[in-house]
Length: 301
Image (cartoon, rainbow, N blue to C red; front, side, top):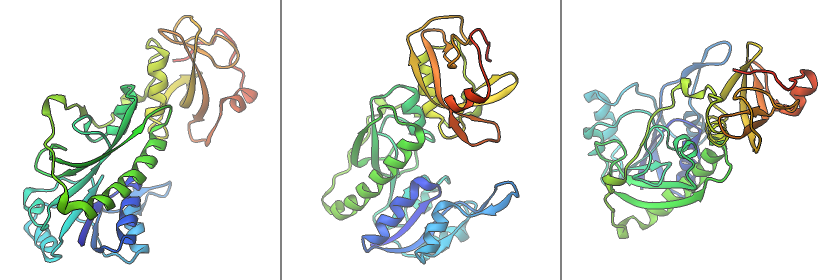
């Protein structure tokens, strides 16, 4: 097939690679424009742009798809299909109508659950036992289109980073298989009554509230690892919790119960096992405690 690929972050890279290696003709890769990053704030291409350039796939980085000129350039590619994975721009109806077989989206949830921008983080925060990938025929609504294929995977104790990498690989292979079987597939409408919304993550959600249950805070740590990182302050210093264990102990919320950084919550307690200090690399909590004692009775915020 003649495919236009549309994606931006690392999550989309395995799908781009898999489609290219499956022998399809990638006529263009659409991705978000380069953004300032790093200490020097130099413009950095997206992960999809870097992969496309390695594979000699033409790259286009429009800031929007709304203009008639951009839409005409898209149409000139004469795509059989567009494959979309975390692109980050809205596709107007005029663009959705151009490919012969429409636009297919690789969405990181079992639709209609967790429609929206942050399905992986929301699934972890909610304590879902299972999540997955849905291949969806795109339409004007937000992740509302009919479904062509799904694949499931357990959430277990995975972080958002780990689950994102796993789902990216699952989505890539599922999309390759979907294109092979496309003539025989029948799209299934979503049940809107079962829909839930995966709102974009607000950085304010990352601050730990020690009055909450330890299990909820542990899920918060996994959902926001590696970014933005669930955090608390210790002596005025911000500490991110990247991994933690729930401990069956009680005490005043926000108070260290021992010298191992076991912190009382609204119910039970949380013992961070992997942390990150501001401006520093991630480290095991045990290594942190060897250099900085946190005695029982210490109050964190």
